[in-house]
Length: 81
Image (cartoon, rainbow, N blue to C red; front, side):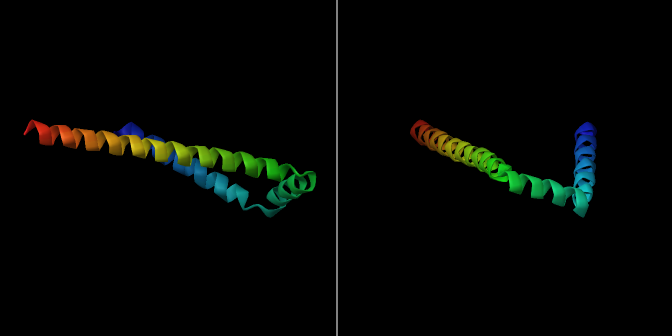
């Protein structure tokens, strides 16, 4: 359990460092301007939205399967009693 806490703490620290570095205006602005001027920002947004939509669909499908299994289990318990 301690290893898991250490790993979570490590990743949290790394995330905070990344956020702090992202606040540097000069580097992030030039990258953003370059991507917008080349039209690549739309590709990045499309990829992110595709991944997000896939995750949402996966979770919704998994929820439906779990609900179905719970209902079947409940019906089996009621029939068994």
